[in-house]
Image (cartoon, rainbow, N blue to C red; front, side):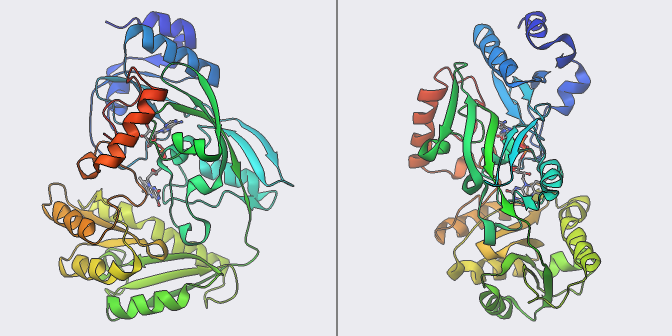
Amino acid sequence: MMDLASLQTLVGPENVSASLEDRLVYGRDASRLRGECLAVAWPMHPEQVVALVEWARAEAVDLVPRGAGTGLCGGATPQRSLVADLSRLTRIESVDVEQRRARVQAGVVLETLNRRLALAGLFLPVIPGSHRSASIGGMIATDAAGLRAVRYGVMRDWVEEVTLVDGLGRVHRLSGDALNHAAGREGVTGFITEATVRLAPLPRQRSISLMAFDDEAALLAQRRRWLVPELTALEYLNRHAAAALGWEPRPHLLAEFDSAQGEIREPARIAELWRQRDGLYPVLAASGRWLIEDPQVEEDNLVALLSWLDAEQIPAFGHLGVGIVHPCFRPNDERIAALYELVAGWGGQVSGEHGIGLKKKAWTDDAFRAQIRQLKAVYDPQGLINRGKLC
Ligand SMILES: Cc1cc2nc3c(=O)[nH]c(=O)nc-3n(C[C@H](O)[C@H](O)[C@H](O)COP(=O)(O)OP(=O)(O)OC[C@H]3O[C@@H](n4cnc5c(N)ncnc54)[C@H](O)[C@@H]3O)c2cc1C
């Protein structure tokens, strides 16, 4: 039996719970993969994360870092572990407008940060569909991408420095190549408690083009024409996804530019189109197709991937500028395995942005697993943090 009373002394009695309700809530993330949560702790500042890790080492308790729990691959799903929810580390420590960088704690929600930055005409431009909830720590841990990846890349591109508390309770400040020991590692090397992120100027102008096509080949031809420097997003909906939104059941492309290139320029209409796009996954999930995947393929294989999904009548949407597509399935659909066989055959990635977590472990290769084991040996030799994730 773990000694929760001593943990309560370290982080405050109100910041630890083993109630049935909390263990149920924290037993899964947005992937819906469920595991066993022994207890939950909410550290209030980075020093308490160090204390928590030291306590867990003494008690031999597994820890699971959690941000907002919006992850879609079971990365924050416990397996007889204590979940450490960092969502109360919410300080925006500093914003340097001139140098375009901010220092933030891990639990800061992207949308909260961007609202504050908008006052200075800046933003952190990595915008996942979950931007209203996702935490900066979770976004770094998963190397999130999203709606504007075609222009702004992935989270790793915007991180300058990360403070990491490892599995031995040591505090590292990682930058340069060493950032890869935390960014995209889904919490297996430790807890990201703070980070310095780079910022971009908010676009002065925005316009959108929305176009429907007869087939995927015509759509991909237009995709090529729209890959211009002013492009900030290029979102795809296949005809099954468009129909779910009440749109004409044809494949659609929504292109956003930071110029007047698109014909839709009225801010209210642009906001409405993005609201509908943001609402697409909830609509599909509510119809039973909540199992969302995220294969990524190179341009040459896009037509094969999109045509296969269309022929199988699988609703799909995604960030087509970077080749990430989100097919949505009902649970236990055997075509998911078939899809990944095809993607592997095309030399694509099984996860373009959501990560590996528990869900996609079977699809990783030996080189990846060896790399994770090496990092584990350095940062978490006791295997205390996010045990069983990634490999
Ligand atoms: C509707 C919807 C749309 C989405 N759209 C996108 C999208 O467009 N692009 C995209 O990339 N993702 C998307 N996602 C997935 C998800 O939102 C991202 O992976 C996001 O980055 C997770 O952030 P989080 O704070 O919720 O992390 P969590 O779900 O809490 O955790 C995710 C992983 O990171 C680890 N982790 C969390 N915080 C820390 C920390 N402080 N230190 C160390 N490890 C930590 C966890 O252990 C886990 O492995 C979407 C999810 C939903 C539900």
